[in-house]
Amino acid sequence: MKFGLYLLETRPQFLILSIVLGLTGTCIAWYDGSFNIWEALLATFGLILTHMSVNSINDYFDYKSGIDKVTVITPFSGGSGMIRAERLTLHEVLWVGIITLSLAVPVGIYFILTKGWLLLPLLIVAALCIVLYSPLILKCHWPEWSPGLGLGILPVLGMYFSQTGLYTCHALIASVPSGFLVHNLLLLNEFPDTEADRVDNRKTLPITLGKKGAAIFYTAVTLLVYIWVIGAVMLKAMPAFTLLALLTLPIAIKAIRGAFHYDEMDRLVPAMGHNVIVVLLTQALIGIGYILAGFINS
Image (cartoon, rainbow, N blue to C red; front, side, top):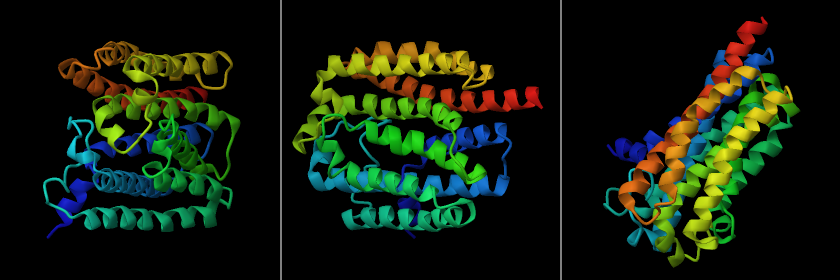
């Protein structure tokens, strides 16, 4: 049975991000008075399937382009390695991506029919971010915006819509930190892949700006996460309890320091680990902040 190999291809250890995104969007909707546990679980399942597809399709294009032959593998970057290890074929990996994306489609259709057609444009944009990322968007000079949007902002908004049937300015403001965080998740993980990405003429920020410039950009976006939350709380666009997100700032500073040691793998890899913690924990704390605020206001 190859099911276990297909599951490993989707890099299940990284699917925690989808669960946290689902939690964040659901908590915001709960705070606004809308919550259905079964629909929350279904929407999160659809998000996980989509994330599986992203990981598999990216592996397919990475191997097909030839960059896998020179990619530096780390615990946080470099793909699943299933094709290089000859445990799965190139076409099997592509089919994993196609099937998981296809399984997510009925979930999207369900919510379009039950919550409203306004979900459709969001799903179309998200699908385009997935399908066009490796063959097209990565050839632009700032591709990191795409995962920030497609695997950050849009999932939170989509989870919110799956509960409420509408979009609000409040939900949009609350989803922006997720966009910044996922943007930086991809950005820091690209540092070890810089030379490999040149093989396929990719234009990631470490290539476009140089590694030092990309480290500065990473720093600015990281700090912007906290500035955004503080500003939103001051403007009463987010509840005060979301300031819990600031608890991850010391870990973020460790990631920032490591980012400037981009040519020292023994310092960069721990920074990538700190970055993952910041991405997951900051969003979780924002969601918890909405839950606490909801209880206080009830």
